[in-house]
Image (cartoon, rainbow, N blue to C red; front, side):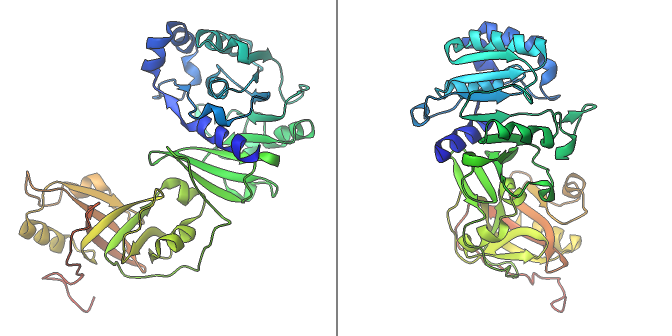
Length: 370
């Protein structure tokens, strides 16, 4: 049950059908969402859930606590689970009922309008989604959620196996010792974080889950002390879920890689290792930061469009890009602005290329004593 429920939970949060698909298939669903569109963060389209591999999940009751208008409820029901959806706001509870009916899932879902922190629940496990927006802005403190984590933990007296959706920016010091914290990203974009209690845990203190997949990396896996190195042949940029879960050293161990700087989460390696947990570039040139030298190299090599990425640099990438001397129509190059062992550094690289490269950090015009 542990692995199946945990896998189902993480996928139900981050796997979605587009709003347009839902609208075409179920006009009633689209109407329900539009009526309560205020529940979605500004600038985001409402989406309904989809979980693949439904046959993997046991058909036993689950509770969706604080279900809102029912997005996660639908994801759980589509996975083949019977769901008790609880929402204290009567308008949202009614809209959840309409959404469930419009998606043809009424036989799997019972919506209850009640205070779920005190409601008696006869379920095997529960998923709680407390409000994390205060005055139109996201908060990061678990005590500031509505209801706060302390109130949510009382639910465990009745349902020991509970998962709680929290903010990806949550401070690790706030995490209860008995909880596992899972950071979930989709296609390289950070989506959610989930606190797992009881049998919803996978057995680690921290975990990164990448979708599609899912692919997991956790704090029980081998991790060596940080090794620092000048740029080698490859630069690896860890997925944001790896950063949030503080698993950069664990990933470095898997990739046989070193960090460029103790405070920078760029990894460098001599050999390419295929992994879903990082994007890889082939390094072409690198040297201590010097705009004049960079422009001289760009002109001399006929470099075309430039993508500027930074980590640990105060420079604005868009403004910096406008100052670069490139050749229209030529191949795209990526410029990384970062630190190498506490020194400002520039790295030029091609993504995904394993062709032979002459990696040098002493291009013409750079003082080799730097």
